[in-house]
Length: 263
Picture 1 (cartoon, rainbow, N blue to C red):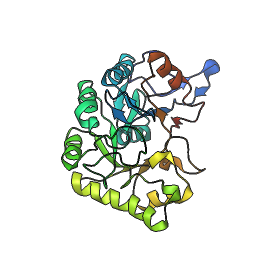
Picture 2 (cartoon, rainbow, N blue to C red):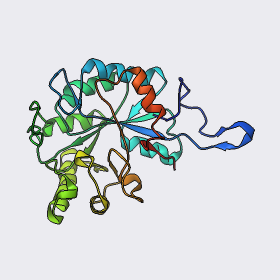
Picture 3 (cartoon, helix red, strand yellow):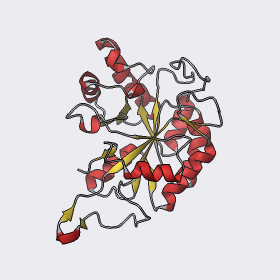
């Protein structure tokens, strides 16, 4: 999705715009939406769950503006070509089973794709890192392969959802490197993306992700200076986000540092 679009625009419109006076206007920046679980569970102490109905309405809001949800991998490739207009990145953290059972059918119905950040050390397990709230099942190996076969991007969220800024050097290396290798073995393809658990990152974490061979990493807020694509900011999407709130978030994406600058 492209920031600063207040009405439906043609996705194939030229990227070069002209401001008043004939001066070239900076190409609009894209942004990335951050989801987690999609279910009817009313117990949500962390505000990370949206109902299937709410997700469907949010996707309809995008489609109604001529926008298409895509994986981060696809969004960055389009940005490199200067063709990101009309695209919005969609991400789902933690790899809940409901991504495959509930979110994926809604995405596919609209021709959208997304990136799902998987905890490869907890496949088939549950969200044991959360101290309170309901236990929710996580994707297993078959689910990951099913999502990949459906055109979704499989990316890493580490092994066990630990705060990498508090991890020892050995744990940091294992969480970042082993998770990538495990997912590559499951999917049979390269794993390009990483997502920092809890959104916590520092220079040591971003350097570890770079060394592990990832092409990008998602955070929440922008990372340390010079992080570039290894601390991509995202916009949290929750149950309360109606069309009015979505429009406000979209308009303020660049202002609050939640937009991806064009390259």
